[in-house]
Amino acid sequence: MNRILRKPLLWIVCLSILVSGCSHTLSLTIRNPDKEHGYTIGYQAQEENAAPVYHDVASVPKEGGIEFSEDFKKDTTVTLRARLGSYIVWESPQYYMSKDRKGGEVYIDMSSIKRVDIAQSVKDLLEDDKKLAKVKVAEGYRPLVSVLNTEFGGFIACRRDNDSDCTGVVPPGAYGGVRDLNWIKANIGGSSVQIHRQYIMNKKATTDVSAGYAIFSTKVGYTDQDYYEYGLDIDIITMKHDETFATAKAKLSLSSDNVVKLANEKLDTYITNPRYKVFFVRGIHIVNQYKVSYKKGQLAETSAKIGVGSFLDGTVAFKLESTSISDDLYKDQVAGFLYEDSIDIAEIDPSKGLKLGPTLDRGLAASFLGTPKFLAVNDIIYPTFPNPTTKANASIDKYLLSADRDKR
Image (cartoon, rainbow, N blue to C red; front, top):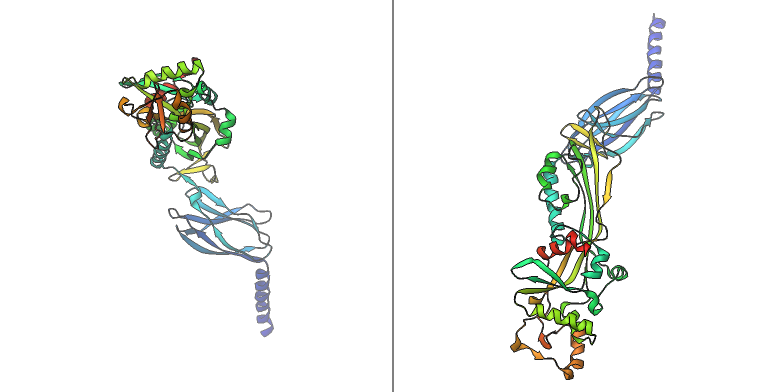
């Protein structure tokens, strides 16, 4: 009797040893630093010569974690998955269970997955549009080379009762003020505007914002798609001429060249004419980069893996095309100007002027060409106001940036 009982007991012990020797444990800690969303963690296990089987294990709360520990048969291939609704948002490397494996801590950050927030996109667009509007106050662009030869460092006169009625009075070449591309490169400074952002947009959002936004005046993009990613890489630098209103005017006043004298006399007639304001084009906003890109968003299949290049609208996933249509618009173009105004330079009042004669020319030359302390108009010199400011003017920009300017 005892011999019969011992046999089953022996088989149980042997079976226990056999089972324990044919499985291995995968254990690790899973963390979720996302402050907004939790997810479901599970695994796909595939035994040798068998179909893969998927099991959900537990929910991982936002800003939370779980301890994962499961036993698998020897030589099983295990892949962990994080899911949000029907979509796989993260997938681990494969664990081959040839031994016990401890994976340590695994961080699955859901915040890296883009989510549709049209209201936020419009808000971001408005914020960036304000940055751009500071340097681009009017529609249009001009080639940089053209502006260097004709406007940068030149004088413009506009009617006081109509800022859009302007005329170029003296180009920079009249006093040797033309600056070339080499000068620009040597004196280039920091950017005035940098915008590097991607927005998730749709037709409604595009319609809402396209009418009043300078950024959207370039291209509209995929307005016929449910969603698309609108990308902007804008880099605009501002250059200031090394001459000022006063120093450029001084060089004109002191020149003995008859052609330059005529140009100076013409400028004087505008400065002293109460119907006009005179502006010196001191600064230009140069587009170093204005790249616009678009990617279509297409509905992802259920159980598709989403991540980089995908986004979620609630529990519906969209996958972006892997390639984008892009265009580097307006590169090496001028998007706006800065001016020194004659009103801010000096008060043209005859009672405050000093007659400029032959004996004063040499003595005043240093003052004219160094720190701008005087302004010469009709052979009378006037003290300039200290620290003149440069300003933008939408009406003059509109005149200078119009397409007709390149047809002269």
